[in-house]
Length: 106
Image (cartoon, rainbow, N blue to C red; front, side, top):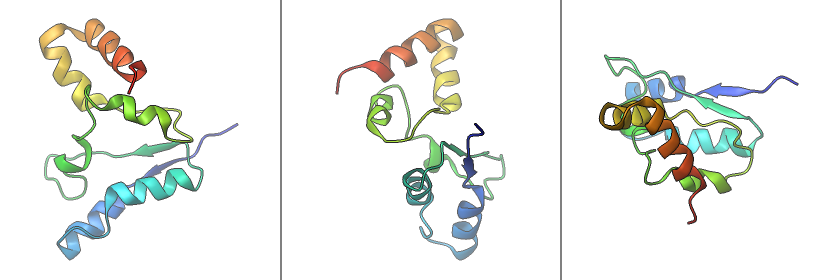
């Protein structure tokens, strides 16, 4: 079976072109998940012309466990936060820490 992932970069591009906060990237991602997609894709760029740091940096080791209860989530992309953590503890330990954080009790 092929999994469907939705790239929400264009939502952010439209928001940035209009100025302000609409359409909301997080709400667009939630709508996609509720509609049955299995993944959300973002590709941050240095020029921030679509996804911006505030759109993706909210997911970190401290709140990762909250994703566990969302229906339909089969994969989580936590690259920025994980690599940042790895700078301090090493990559292998960072992966172990994030796996443990995902499984922690709420």
